[in-house]
Image (cartoon, rainbow, N blue to C red; front, side, top):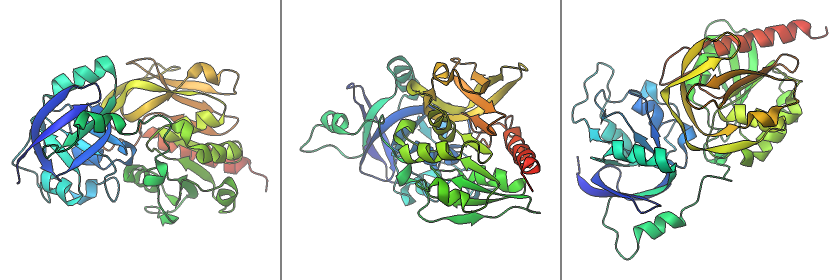
Length: 369
């Protein structure tokens, strides 16, 4: 591996020296931290990280290699990777190669030997911020100035960078039970697999697909997927969701959850450092049951702005009391801020998908003959 000096520069001037690996060059993005202990490949390939530099808080990354089956998208969309220590050995029966080579092949710039504990504490205190990774000594420019010239995440619709360009069908596994549409704002393959395992044939559609086009498919339900960027900037997705509420059973996941909230008249706001990891506890407000969930989002719905709607808040975060889920029985809506498919993370919340199937079946049984 080609070891080279690298630098991480934050927009407030804080600088971390390290060793570059993966691709070489310079990249910019909002730096965030992820607290998952495993699943670095799934996290790196999650399209929701488009425009961000991901810091892993786990002390060693790469120790079990990579496997094609774990990719969550065809190519990673994130800007860069920051870690403490890169394992020089990948030991796992599923391993098909090293994480460093995997990143290099996909042109992802990364930096190791960074004090990620200090970096994470800094971001917790001051919030996520713009940053740049430089794997070559800057010549003829000020790296801090370059970082401060890079775009902020607020106000940016990034779904066009990660959505499918053409519709395609993701087939059901086993006997097909229902057909649903999924608007791809940056969907993870884990979500598609979870739906297919329940017998759903999924018609995956570009982010800009209209409500009329979706209704014209004759599907029995709709999924609004996860994705990157500021939800308030996804104006076409909000318009489509607003037009379909009450006309199809809808499941919103992460960005899809926020888009549903905005379609219902709610407001969203940016969290200080977001929720990124596979160990976030959320509580069912009715039963008191706690799920440990996988999460990846930097924005949240203001629950007060949902007041007056025919909705029921179902889940809240036990970290900061932010809204994690709501439903509407009358309008056939399930919306969850967390990732029920995990990938990586625990499977506590996988029942969300079976609830969606039940919603479809209840809706179709009440449909006029």
